[in-house]
Image 1: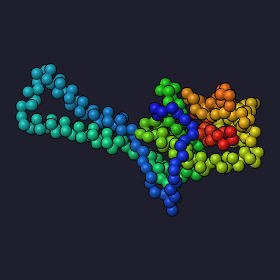
Image 2: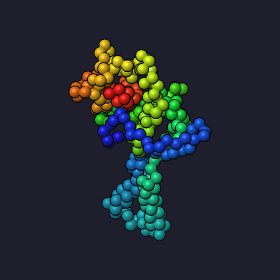
Image 3: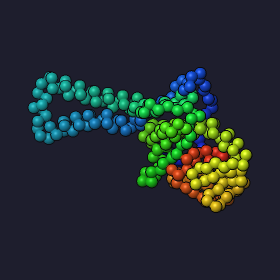
Image 4: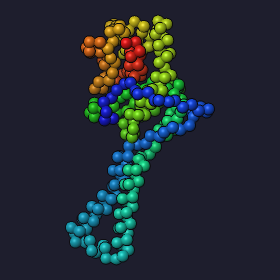
Length: 248
């Protein structure tokens, strides 16, 4: 993820429905092609390096003294270039497939409907200053890791978060209206406001809930930093941001 990490996702313009439990396939996500291009280029680089070494040893004419040798090396060269071009165009292996009613992890074969998704947690890589992965947990106990090596991972995470908000926000708001509370790691949302430990910030005073440098940060309407917690300690931080946005 090269863009600034944010909690609230842009909403899709339309939602598709399907008669069966998973529905039709909408789009696929693959491993970032750039990583595979490096491996695809390895035979070409090795072949080129070997040719340079032969030339420095004055052995190049010895190995290219027949038509067969020239054709063999030329064929390897063409195949290497073709492999690089194919990998760059197609991308890496397919790892996730989004369906109308759910998501499939093609690495493990696990599948989950949107309404079965319980939590999505971001894990921050302090060394790389980015979100290293998201872990999606289902009501059945399954876990799917959505890593930064996936091409278009920002769009995939945005879609998962938007779908989860569609299925969970109404029930969270209903619970708060009935006087209950919902925990998001160290944060607790209630009808009164947002609480951390023994402190409570009324909704009218909540300015913003967003991600900043690996933390979920709550700011007041005056822009003051009121509370913070590491991203990995706040499951469904995006849902907390949505709740705050609806109460603010």
